[in-house]
Length: 398
Ligand code: FEO
Image 1: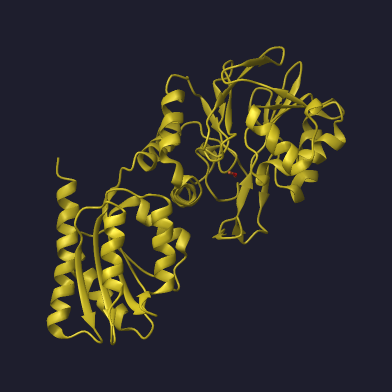
Image 2 (image 1 turned 180 degrees about the horizontal axis):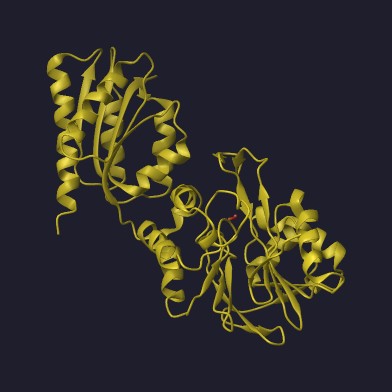
């Protein structure tokens, strides 16, 4: 078999998952996902992270292909989420003398998830180093990117950062692992969706981690998901910096809920208003759209317009679901517009207004419409879209 040697004596030994439909049992995986593990072969041999349990035997085969019957000395546990840690017991079963390199927060999780004793673990402190013989590994804690125990491992000799989930994305690695060998459009799109849904709540810890890493020379970033980044490191760091610092692009996302098509017709009018000012306008039906994609679009663009009928004296439930996701991630500083529709008693418009207030966004542009849309109301909806787009445009004028 062809081995993936990504740098001298450093190997990609991860796996592709094309079986799982929903990541975290929620997020669609149209292009699959990779669980990345790396093997550093020196006087001592170290594995960086494992893979999800059902793929542990495949990981073991990949390791044996590189080191044959040699012993695996260290397993560096950068991240404990089970997509990377549920292969640990298989590794321990095959390599009984294996030492797990962990930090204080990892220890509790290893005990809790896998019933492991501390005698298989070697605790490191932030910034501490261990030697593999010809290489020193240093450990840099990055709490909340994306769990509290996360650390990154740096190999100064090769200028390689093993970054846990950071700089990761969905999408399997089809036939190659380096960014220079892959068509990257898919991975960059999936990086936005991955960030928004997985790491998006933790923008400020990501910024802290980026600042910490700013001084390290980097020739390669090895994340736990997606390509190994080499030539494209500046773009990838740029995307993470953009998203974690709350920077946005010029554009407006329109999302609506509609039971019988009236609110959908209104969305078309709003979109025409936006399109009279700018080209970047995206419309999503909250009942049929993939919410993970919708959320990544909301992360990306400055403008957001939501439209909903009143349902049981509240906002339409599928709309409320995406609003909860926005609130959980504390998405900041959106130019916001809304319209609420109703048949006999309106509640959606009020709900949107108080949502904008709770998010501390600037005063929104809002409308309320009873039953089906009149020509005059179509004009008002056009104007709603136009005004939001004008505000968005103004926000990008230097
Ligand atoms: Fe891919 Fe947070 O685990």
